[in-house]
Each structure stands twice: as C-alpha cells, then as structure tokens.
Length: 402
Image 1 (cartoon, rainbow, N blue to C red):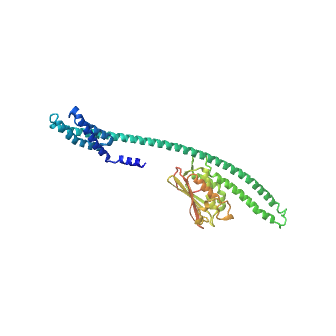
Image 2: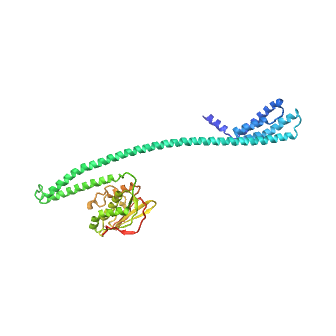
Image 3: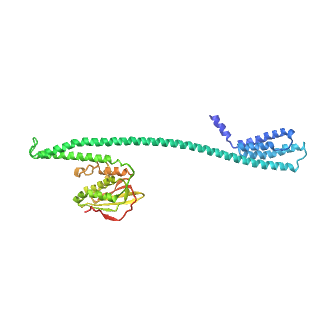
C-alpha cells in the first residue's frame, strides 16, 4: 500500500513530464539519424514533430514545448549539419526548415493540448453528471422511503387516536353511569333525610353529611366532561382550514355567555376583529374560556373585558384584557397545565380551560401566553392564529354588552 502511494506521488510530480521531453528528444534524434541513410535530410524534423505531438497529447503543452525547443537545437546540430557532407549545403533553406518546424509544431501541440483538456473537462463533467444523477436517484429513493414511513406512521397515529377516542368515550360513559346513580340516590336520601334520620346523628346531620358526597359526584361528572373536551381538542375536522370572521364568532360566544355576563354586571368591549384561518368551533372555545375566566376571577369592581387583535406577517394576535384579580408572575406558565388551579376549590371549574385553549391554538401553528398581569390590576391573555384576508376596522361595543 505504501509503495503504491509512493508510485502515485512520483507519477504526479510536475518535473517528470519535462524529463520525458528530454528523453523523447534523445529517442527522436537517434531514430532520425538512423533514417538518414535511407531518406537523407529531407523532412529533417519528422521524428521530432511526432515526439512533440505525442507529448502534447499525454503530458500537455509545457513538456511538448520543451521537446520542440530542444528538437530545434538537436535537429539543426545533428541532422542538418550531417546532411551537408552528403548533399549540397542548405544555406537559407536550413533556417526556413527550422522556423517552419518550430512554428508548426508549437501550433499543433497547443491545439492538441487544448483539445485534450477540453475532452478531459467534458469527461469530468459527464462523470460529475453521472454522480449527480446517481445521487439524485438515491435521494429520491430515500425521500420515497421516508414518505412511505411517514404515511405509515400517520396511519398508525390515526388508528391510535381513533382507538383512544373510542376508549375515552367508552370510559366516560362507564364512569358517568355510576356517578349518575350516586347523584340520584344521594338526592333521594337528602329529600328523605328529614323523615329518615341517619343512625346516631342529630336531626339535619344526615343532609349535611350528604352534601359533600353530592358535590364531589357533580365535580367528578364535570371533570369527565372536561377531559373529553380536552381529548377532542386535538382532532381537526377533515378538509382545508376555513377562513372565519372572528367578530361573528365572538358575537355568538357572547350571546351564549349573556346570562353569565349579566349576572356579573360585566362589560365586554371589542374592536372589529379580522378573519382568521381556524375552525369556528375552536376559536369559539378559546374565546369562551378566556372570557369566562375573566368573569369568574373578577375583583371587587364590575368586570371590564376588552378584546382586540393585530395582524402582521400572515398572523393574527388576539388580546383579551380584564380588570380582574390578576396572576402572580411566577405562575405565568403553570396556569396552562392540566388541573393547575391557583384558587383551590373557592371557584368552580377543573383547571383545564387554559390547557384546552393551548392545545387548540397550537394545532394551527399558533401559541397562547400571558402578556401581562399584576395581582389586583387584571390580566391580559394573548393568542395567535393564522390570519385571513379581512382588514381591521375601528373599535365598537359588542351588541351583547350591557
């Protein structure tokens, strides 16, 4: 292996071609002297011309040029001078033969070298194209394999999600059935508690003992419903994503929350919202959860909620600001987790609403975050989704606001 590498290094040495040029001149001179008795000094540089052409093809114009220059000296010194004793003197014809040989040989050698280099470049380009074609074929095969793997993975994921959805519905049905039984019989016992007092308890104690059971069962029922809603938040409808008018969606949400808004004495203001590329039910769910939280976690003041939006770079960022209780900064990420509640059992709910919002917007490449919040000064939640094509207009009051 080392000898092969050494041989390759020696073969590539730049001086080797010039050494071969000297050797070629010697061989051409000996061969031409051997032909003098047969052809005399006619066409004196024929062997030198052949040597220059061969060197130009195999070693390039440099060694061929050296061979031609040396051939001029060797031919004039050995062939032409030798011919003077055999034939008549050459005189000026000797100079013409030398100049003609040098000019013709250099021109032909240059053209041969140029053609050889052109052919070499063409072959190199052809080999490169062949390599590129093979590489493209390999990449295409890999892309097809990756596409097949992705398709197979998507099919498996789709089957797993379908099985999980069926399991979730089945499990919820099986869980809610005994809960309904517990709630029904607990209510019956409560109604009869005054007539049938529990053993060892004073009058009215039975009903008081049953209240936590009924509340826990109802809370469990709500928790199951919210878990089902969270599991369905990852399932998008088939077909392309539609463009919906966010103002219309918000109006429908506020109509559905009108009772809650009136009971709390809340005021909801909104700018004219743009169209966005998201399913209407998903956008409505996000609006409903954020506005409900603003009303639920209100301060001593009447709730004041402002909904606005800004569009930039094909994205629309919605903002829902309120004057409620606010959130401590250290809980800005915790509130988006499952069952993360900052107020314990003091407020209704399961702590899954913001997690559902986050799961909904991330399906469309967006995100949701707490922009700013101070305890006692309210909070501002923002979420981004792909924008539609409608432009923003001026601010207006929502028709359902009191």
